[in-house]
Image 1 (cartoon, rainbow, N blue to C red):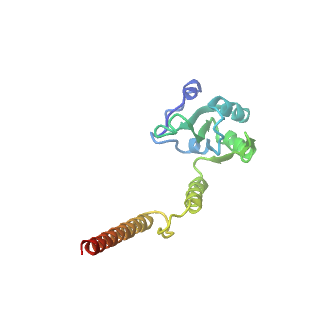
Image 2: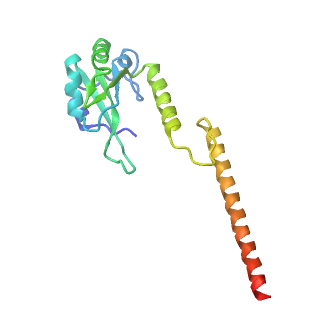
Image 3: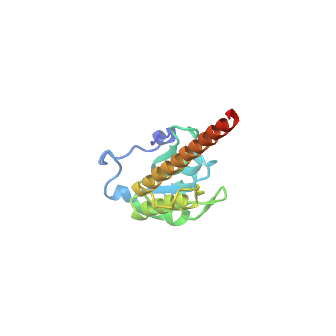
Length: 179
């Protein structure tokens, strides 16, 4: 969920020719995605870093809104410049630049490459996650869900077999002691 920052309210107002879900036309090309932000970077710092490249008309700094990390930054933001030329210049100058020891990822937010990078990031996360015994490696989605269900069923079956063998052993030992 997106929580709009207090700093955004202080910036220049947005044009009214935008749709409700975002920006259209040239405005979409003047909006930057800024990722790989260190958690120590604040909204004010982000604005100071990008303001030399043009007039910033809005900034959306994203925060966790629920869960154990509630109130912490999510590590990315969106910055809207007044023109696409300013946004392109900021992208060229800031992409890969170190901020708090981390290279910034700066892209035009309408680029398809942003969606591809997110897909690669999620697949890398899934691939680097430790595998649990009995869970086959499957691609994400419905197949992965089915594999997890099958693994749980197998585990339950093994537990049931273990329980019945313990009961049989107990019955056998009870019958031996009663004779």
